[in-house]
Length: 117
View 1 (cartoon, one colour):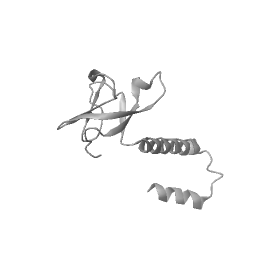
View 2 (cartoon, helix red, strand yellow):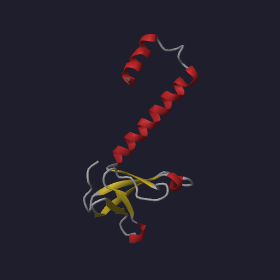
View 3 (cartoon, rainbow, N blue to C red):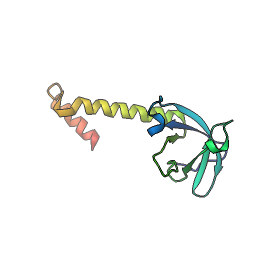
C-alpha cells in the first residue's frame, strides 16, 4: 500500500462491532495528517475527536481493541474484495462434504486443482 498524502480521499468500511447492528457502509474519508508511523483520516465537517488513526505500512486501524474500520484506496477495491469473498464462499459451499462432485467431470476437477496450485 502506498503512503497516503494529506487531502487524499479514501474509503472506510465499518467492521467488527461497528457493523454489528448496522449495515456495512462504505464512507468517504479524507487524510488529515500523515506522520512517520501513523496517518489520520476523518470525515469532512466532523470534529477532530472523531478522526481515526491508521498505520502507514499496512493501513490497519491503530487501536488497543478490535478495529472498527477498514480502509480502501478506492471503492472498486472494496467491491473486488467483496466479490472474491462471495465466489470463495460459493466454491466452499459447492464442495463442502464432497457435494456436487458426481456432476463434475474428472478433467474439470483437474483444471480446478491446477488453478488452485
